[in-house]
Length: 177
Image 1 (tube, rainbow, N blue to C red):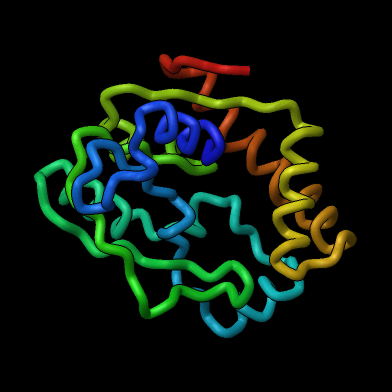
Image 2: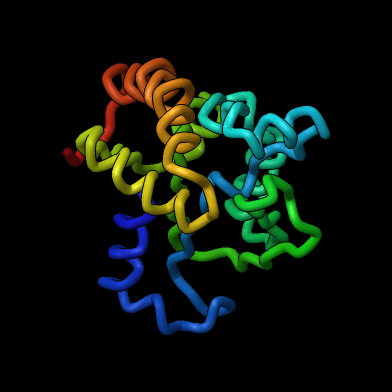
């Protein structure tokens, strides 16, 4: 999803525009991971926490943020650190754009949030490509291959099949394979 959104930004000439003046803005669902308890954080550091489950996200904050942006308000969006598995104190100010590209693994799961979108685009990629991208990304974050593969087979792939695929086939989306 992020690759497609970044390409859209590039094609629309928005990459070089000051963030206060952008007409198109990308907002990632990843910014809305819940603050983990000490036990959850310990499991996350071992690759034993399911970040691909709907309960991993702060859906209330996500909804309030999206509603505020739709209402033309400047918002402060949380920053999530994937190495330490924690929400940082620093935030990013997002100025209301003409077009908001909201992307994430479960961007369409929550009905209340899904109903806010004027256009929905489901980007599906071959599962081998998804896995290889995840391996490369997570290794850059300091994780070892065994942990990445275990997390993928235990959480990522089953969550995709349980939460993402049913939404894709049950609703009306522009689907790119």
